[in-house]
Length: 60
Length: 141
Image 1 (cartoon, rainbow over the protein chains, first blue to last red):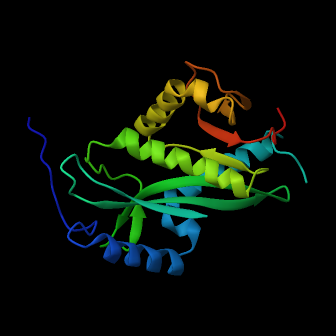
Image 2 (image 1 turned 135 degrees about the horizontal axis):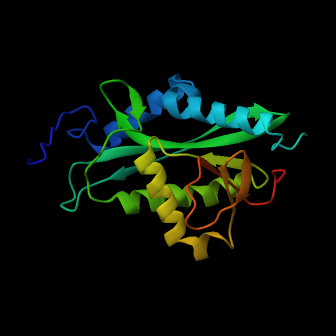
Image 3 (image 1 turned 60 degrees about the vertical axis):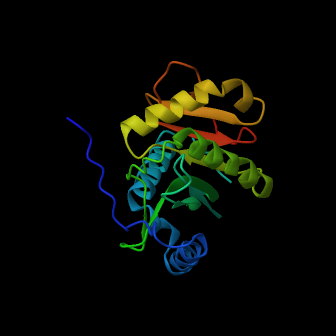
């Protein structure tokens, strides 16, 4: 079956680089870093918890 | 710490803004960082690390993402960075990239993989649950 490509403007493809950059900067300025990639951050926390439980982290 | 860059297809269009983040987390009184990246999604006003951009430049994009590690460690030479894929296919691809660039990476970074309850120096051919990278050996092994 031929792969169907769906193009939307979700990613701001019709904007200029500068316009997209401005939107990205606004997003970064108004969003907590842990909320930008929530699933990635969740896995990070889980993995760090795992390392802590396993005694693999140095204590300061 | 954050970085942005643009991906284009071979015709030089379909521009997508890529966002690379180093997100901190405190554990045992120390800061650890997660390397995260994906496409800016204008509709949600968020970033998306599951989307397939389909610009045919994945290797170039990942090399650009990897190049931010050097800049990160210039500012935070004693920190540890956690790296994981957003799914098993991407995780396997990152492992393949480390394998491909192993001789370049090893002199620059300490790369450890987590498997079966332990961290070990990255070995080719082993599928790790996740990877941690540092400039110096900062983890108890």
